[in-house]
Length: 598
Image 1 (cartoon, one colour):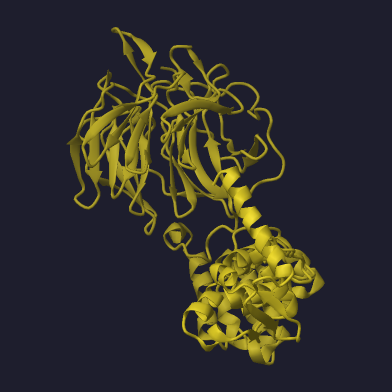
Image 2: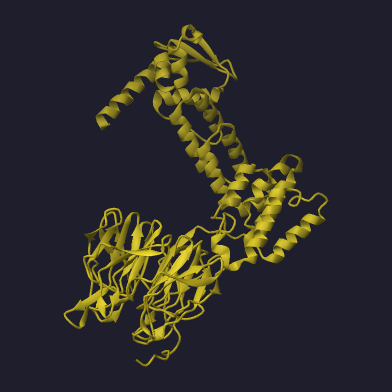
């Protein structure tokens, strides 16, 4: 609507409001339920803005002919505000008149005022009034406000507990808060005691809500001694709360069973075993600094809010050219090498799992075969390590890690020995692209079906490439970076990028990278692809750059840097507890590590 039309409408409203002020052409008088005050209005104006009055004045109801109508569900204050809004499109709201106005808007079905009241109510929630706001929202079924109350309680639980006001909150708000991943500063034991305090505040009416609250306490994240303490405290009480509820007993059993099976935990994830955090970030791990021949064991996250890197617990062993995969909220790192060696002769077989809930590493079963320059994928709850190289040369074997047994077993080999290839998962299939076979760069794409335990050839990429990266965004499998031969012996960065469509079995060229990166980390974060670190053959050096690709715009940009130029670095995106402090410069060991003799 243009400014001319808006001024016309305002002029029209002003005219009717002037008529209302001196009772000109008014054809009905409204009387609020709580007083004898009268409000002369025009039926047609009221019916045009209120579904309630529209039904009353046009639906054949007896009020259609009445000169004066008593509105028993509306107060004088609420009715005045609604009429003022209808005639002026303005409403004066504050916490003093909000409930009256809300109830009138709800009763008379004046939706814009209802929306304004919702917004004000949501924006004015405080520690002092949140219990009252929650009651109003519940009485009038204001779902948006109820959601905002839940969010407010989650963010302010500490102050609500300190003031004791949490004891007056509803079961719904308590459950929302206790299930929230954004709760910070509480141990699960403390949250258990908060839930217990709320339940004990009014046992007769709240006893029935024990499981409704306790199901949101993450008992599996407690220590065994804390679980024992809960059982003992419960036993010592006159009336046990947890043990008298079968569903609550199962919560404690679930926690005990979970803790007894550490290797299986990624397959046993529930809402109670998740990390209680909503901090999801890009992580970078490992890599080698070529100038110093130093291999990194650092695990760091990039905090986009501050522009700083933060340190998580370093890996047990320094490594680069390793495989990384996420499963059940855990990070797995497998193989690679701990010593600088361009031939892969110092490949290792060790494997570890990082638990972001406790910032801890756990060693898992080692590979059957040492491998570096290989690919690791998570597929249908298992890990697959494909190809690579070691002291014996290029390898074609594929190993599958079953976390239920904590062991690696061999599955069907890839058709030829490969190293320097890249891979990704789409649906229930794993795709492996490019790489190097018998010293020759490849453009082949292979697809592995774990159910059939079989490999199948798919359409070739448009470019030969190795030491590149591959990732999935929606139904597109992107291939980026890497290098290939220029002429007969020299290497060249591959700047061209392309994506594969599994449904069409075809490749499509997309925007090229502005700078070459090989032997890199790649991760997808918020629908965009981040290519991390690596080596540029055209520049003949390791790089510290991070390039970002936007699939929707088909555009690249430079975003931030890693702390040092690292090749063989790996990256992922995961939810962690944000550590204190930042790392603003490299923290590498002094002096070079020993190198392998070629």
